[in-house]
Image (tube, rainbow, N blue to C red; front, side, top):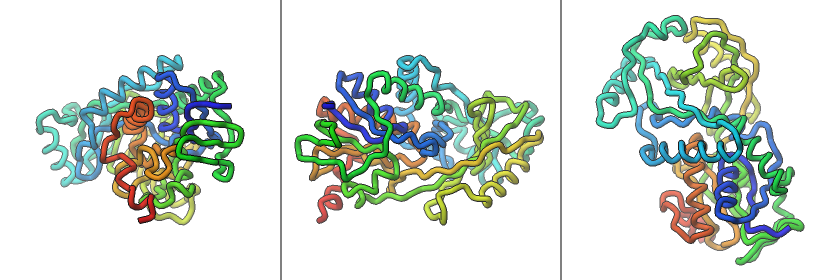
Amino acid sequence: MTVDYIIVGQGICGTFLSWNLLKKGKSVLVIDEANPYSSSKVASGVINPVTGRRIVTVWMADELFPFCKKEYLEIGSDTGKDVISQKNCISFANSAQMLDGYRKRAVEPASYISTITNRKLLDPYFNFVFDCFEINPTYLIDLQTLLPAWRNHLENKSSIIAERFEERFLQSSDRNVQYKEHHASKIIFCNGVKTFDTAFWAQLPYVHNKGEVLIADIPGLPGDNIYKFGPLTIVPWQNNLWWVGSTYENEFATADPTEQFKTTFTASLKAVLKIPFTIVDHMAAIRPAAVERRPFVGLHPNKPSIGILNGMGTKGCSIGPWFAKQLADHLVDGTTIDPLADIQRFKRILSGI
């Protein structure tokens, strides 16, 4: 098979890159082994404009949020699925210091944060002492619908093969690549942490970042919002269940789910909820994260037929579509990539200088 582009991985990045390239009239072949515990499939799907203990607005929030809404609505229309909904986050201040921080942010011009004045609506469900705040907008992406729907679309076009990528079968020159019997002008790596196992990208400053989550049945909890208590986030999930997490670990002894996490987060959930719940699943995944917290986007400085779209960390649902479009535009139309994300900033490292 001969195509314009081979894409390795069909998480958020691989999905949106292949979608954008197909919209531009290009042909693609996606190689994806369909790992049920990839970071994209275990992720909550939350796009939140506010982050961290310092309650700061996320990078590029003003541009990202209208863009993401448009992109998810469009890919949802293309697949015949509803994949985005607005589920504003209710964040509970869990200390006097956090309360002060939220109050200061809430009065800033064009703030995404407002104080919730009617606490009685939340009293039947939660234990809380300090005020709570609404983060508006917060979007929830249904990854459990989107990723399989796009995979089905690719299967119908004979544009995906379900297998693990093996570097030993890849041959490349400056002008094209061959993977087994498949030929393309370029190959783009979007396969999460496995990207950095290849000789092309192993030198990049990245970390394996582990996240663990619980899936809980919480009958009676209103599903109109996301609820956040410091590091504990409670997110409406599939089949009327709730996603509860998550950790952000750069050092860990095992990639598997741990009893320590389950015990700690179950206790935290019990402390904040007034209503009963049942833990029905426990999962873990490894996120690809850039040390400097900016993604890796573009073509290898010494191997122009080999590219990367990776390193999104916990922000894959928001910045993944943004940089997928940037990379597609760069590949097809020659437009520039944001210098803060462009892989050319690591030219010296990747050139072995």
